[in-house]
Amino acid sequence: MTVPEPLGALITHRRRQLGQSQERLAEQLCALSGRVTITKNEVSRYERGRRVPNARSLKLLAAALGLPLVDLERAAAGARSRAVTPAEPVAAAVADAAEREEGAVDRREMLRQLAAASLVVAGWPVGTAHGVDLPARVTAEHVAELREATGLYRTWVRRHGGGGLGRHVAALLERASMMHSAARDGATRTLLLECIADLAGLGAYVARDVELHDYAGRMYQLGLQAANASGDRHLGGHLIVRMAGHNIELRRPEETLGLLSAARQAAAAVLTPGERANQHCIEAWANAQRGDAAAVRRAVGQAEDEFARSDGTAAPEWGGQHVTEAELYSLTGAGYVDLARTDARHCAHAVERLERAIALRGDAHARNRTLDLLSLAEALAIAGEPVEASRTADQALGLFGGITSGRLRRRFAETAATFGAHGGRAAEAETARLRLLSASAAGSA
Image 1: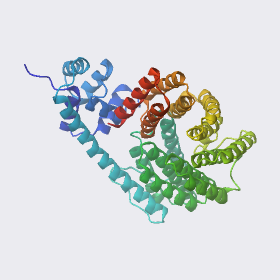
Image 2: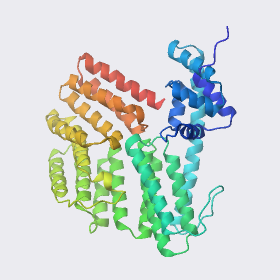
Image 3: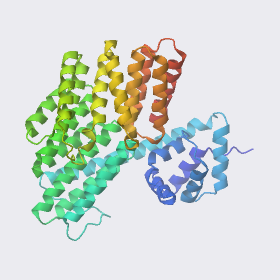
């Protein structure tokens, strides 16, 4: 009897037969479904056998790939019911190789787009890329459209993470660069430089989230150069602070503190109380990584004092998410978790602050809410509360399905390690540890 082709291999072979990338197939599925939430990451999970499409998704795949629905349904049924066969690892290896190849092509294209933007910021015009339609006359209305698109991407990464988004942000950055070269009046060109700076900052944030840290650093440098060229010291100072946040993720506290000092010198006159509060939060976390509890308490107090001075003035769109009360409690709570790793007496402060942050987070910030839940789970595990820590980890795992974030996958693995070190013999903690490791491995395979 002929063994039916595994579902993942069937999708992969047909897609490649049609000469489509995973990204192009995802775009077709979005168009057929009327949704914008299907990404190349979802296609990749289907092809690697990490997820079996539901009945509706199978119909969409049949339409997009021109395959008989019955063939896909039969392969899906087999994927749900059969044990692992020798053919499946081979199919998964084929899909993984294809995904790596596509990822390398994406990265080369993104680097080319970054280079084009760098030329423009340095004062060298670039031509219009093949297939890109630019307006005959670039106006402020076209700048507003760029800003609107940037805002949509910013909202997406807050909710869903940065997976699959980097290429789109880089393409928009290149478009802004070409529009700058085509613009005729100085005012519009200055506005476009501000757009380039903002897009570079967003591109860096997305790159951080998918663990492309070198690329993130290059994006931040471009953003700073564009902000300087436009004369926008406020945006420039903001980008320096975001670089400090990046160094916190990389556990480089000394570099973080140096960047915060540079930001204060560069933009002291234009920083709002909320922005100063955010800087003190990052300062507190950096000092926690250094093990300086007194400096942490001092910086937390300064952050709360500055936040209390906020007058409710709307922040620029590029800075709004960083000056909220939820962010204040999230960053300082994470700092206290780092202190608790060597002194469990700090757990109470960590738990209190993280619970407050989680309560303040809405659905629009699902990614950050999940990160807060993982930090809280760690604090509870260190405090010797394995059952409550496990329940909190389960909440984080429950939110993971719609998020594509390399940083989040790494945090799953780190939280699992904390459970292993502090969970003792509690069965709940061991079960949670294994589930966290499974989620980390499934996301990164």
